[in-house]
Image (cartoon, rainbow, N blue to C red; front, side, top):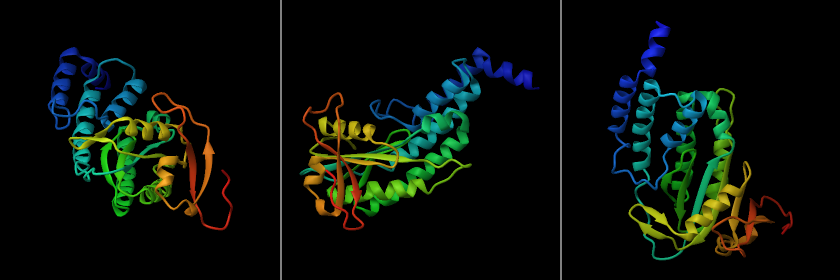
Amino acid sequence: MGEFLAKTDGNASVVRLARAVRTRTPGAGAEVNPDRLRNSDRVAELIAQARGEKPSAVRELGLAAVESWQAFVTRRGNTKPSVDGPVTILFTDLVGFSTWALGAGDDAVLALLGEVNRASEEIIARRGGTVTKYLGDGLMAVFRDGTDAIEAAHEAGLAVSAITLDGYRPALRAGLHTGEPRAVGDDFLGVDVNIAARVADAASAGEVLATEATLACTDETKYIKRRRRFRAKGTPKDLVVYAVFPRYDDVADDV
């Protein structure tokens, strides 16, 4: 039976049929913005790496379920605030997620992403932010208030670090930048968005990085800030970035 299933799974006709089913599931159609990364894209990449590039009907049908789920969670972020002034842009993602996911299995990956998204969404909403899109193992959100954005980033990091799945404890990192991105449909685009994403990429596990522009619109006395050496493609050469920590005592700034 095992040999039969293995042969059927790789049968070209069966794979074509499974792929056709997948391309017709919600979230896989042409109406999805191609610029928007989805959890299923990341999961597809991980499955391909783990199982090789050999065509698989099981893989195609598994991705159909992932894409249907992702279509649902993406639609939850379609309400955006008006953009009549600056907003603070937050990007988050999980450090080391890809390595863990390769051996965890599809069900565990989906379960973890669901928990992380729910924890992050709740905190972001409570702090007055709006999730604009999901990015595989992370998300993008916007806030009218820079202080709320920083607080949300730290609180989300703590909440995510409290999640455990089969002994695995995820670690979130975050990057923030304040500017005036361009609203396109239910998304935001532009240099300011790119800067925030690059800042997040530079953060370590559990770390929140924020640009000088974000700190300038907050009460900086509430935070300990440490300047970070930063250089990334597509960002201004004079961009100043800080690691930001909530101030819980009278420790002096270490700038």
